[in-house]
Every structure is written in C-alpha cells, then in structure tokens.
Length: 89
Image 1: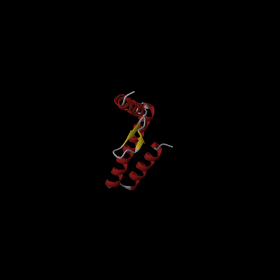
Image 2: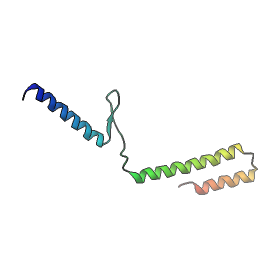
Image 3: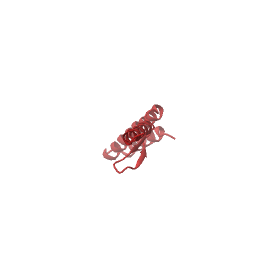
Image 4: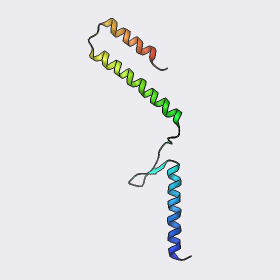
C-alpha cells in the first residue's frame, strides 16, 4: 500500500465514522467537544412535552390576567381554585 492509498483509506474511515456518529446523535462543537443531541424520533415524549408547555402557557396567561386586572377578592379566589383544579399532579 503506497502513502496515497493510506491517506485515502484514513479519510474514508474518518468520514464513515463521522456519519455513523451523526446518525446516533453525537455532534462536535467548534472546539471539538462532543455532545449528545437527543433523537427526534421519540414523538410521544415530544408531544407530551409540547402539551405540558401549552398548559403552562395557559396558566401563565391566567396568572398575568389575575395580576393585572383589578378584580374583587371573590373573583381572585375563584381563579386560583380553577388553577388548582387544572394543575397536574
């Protein structure tokens, strides 16, 4: 094997290794540090997290409304109770 073939072989091995690592979610930053990128194939978990984020955003909107509105104490108590009823355990 001459030096040219050896260089081509090394380049191919490194390239194939990089492709395999990328498929498994292992990436490198600009400094060469490796980090894991979670697989996007887990749709059930992604949908569950998106639903939880949506619910939290709704709760934040209610809390913002409660904080900015000049409601009576009774209305405030009702809003807080509704939030407690909807909160996940």
